[in-house]
Amino acid sequence: MANIQQATLAGGCFWCIESAFNSVEGVVSAFSGYAGGQVPNPTYEQVCTGTTGHAEVVRVNFDADKISYRDILEIFFALHNPTQINRQGNDIGTQYRSEIFYHDEEQKREAEQIIDQIQLEEIWSNPVVTEITALNNYYQAEDYHQDYFSQNPQNQYCNMVVAPKLAKFKKKFASLLK
Image (cartoon, rainbow, N blue to C red; front, top):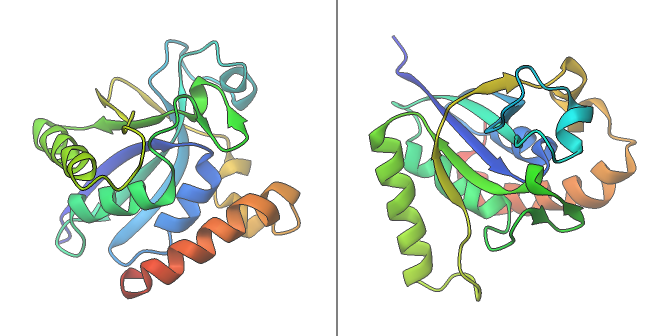
């Protein structure tokens, strides 16, 4: 029987993060969604206003016997710039913040440890601003957001932003891919 656990991560636009995690060995599924806000069952349009408090997140369901939560976090930090406050590149707003929504105290501890390590190793020239917050809600995004990158290869944003990030990710993490 699989040891399925969950990670809920915000690192900018969820299309790239979701697509990357869905290609990783040990990841059962990854879904785009929203977390951290006050409005129940928000829509994409509501979240985009920046007034609901939600972040665009990816819910990663993974087999902890095949891939560790630590590995999930290392991939997460390689997929986005954790030093940018409320943005990723040209995507600006609180919905694009860097945040780890932990599911239990062990996840919180591991998140704190990896951020401390990143800071100590000075991987980034600026401080990591990734928030670590207890998961208080999660709403799966609308169906058209799921597997968006592979369903919409003609999309300009996907071509200009997502595709290059995924190519870089696949090169760096080739040994972890399905």
